[in-house]
Image (cartoon, rainbow, N blue to C red; front, side):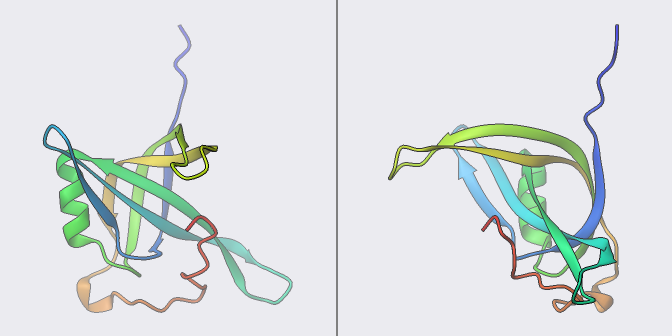
Length: 127
């Protein structure tokens, strides 16, 4: 039988502080976006970034919510997940593709963490 692979591995900086939500039945989820700088410059000689939405559940959610901050450099390993949700106001359905975090590494010591980087963290097109 053919084993299908669904694995994402990348590193980048958090766009903003994570959002933590407590759910029924003692469950929790955290969501955050990671800006991943592209390897080439655009026409203005600046690096663009891709903004990758990430989620984690359960014990990881609380840990990441407590420790992650905007601007931190992290390494992520996980799998892509797709889901749909309905907008409560308009009733319109939306599709989302996000990374379910399986492993997260802090890639710099606290003394080197910074909020300003060489691409704009505030330009997340998904927020």
